Image (cartoon, rainbow over all chains, first blue to last red; front, side, top):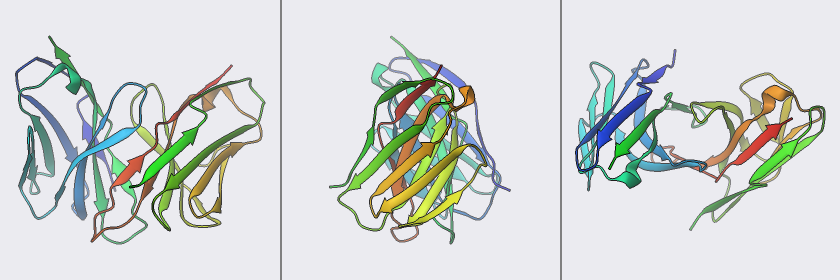
Length: 112
Length: 114
């Protein structure tokens, strides 16, 4: 079955690095994604990684994928107050209707 | 470029009243469309998805329904709202791109049932 889990809350100081973790159960996932949701807004796609990759870097964002352990992480370097939001990981599978399974969301609080 | 609109942005409705939320997408053709509900700012619950005009699949049985009268229009409805229908409703669209299927979300509708 499909199950994507994240820790509920993370607090970091401005300028530090943030690491948001995600575990999933379905090994047939093809792409994994990170979304950001600011208060009262829709979700915004941040980045994605193909399942045969183990790392992807995009400016301050680094995605690490450990397919053996079914573990995905998002590292935000030099975290800013504007990074405060809820972060969702998500996965898609080959075939089907493009269903995306979202994680439970991690609320990141950045302390000035 | 593609854009997605939802309205209204906020809505306060009494229990037992009808509901109609609208979502439209611009700048793409034949998208997959989705309705999600998010309670208390946390996880997303997929309510309905549509792969084409008139094609609706329900993920969770409830008193809500969805319709897709046009290619880029998706409507969420209820004949009689319940208190438990309160939440943040998000519409999203996706188009498969070489195996990727990232979804793009609208701004959401905050529904409060009183």
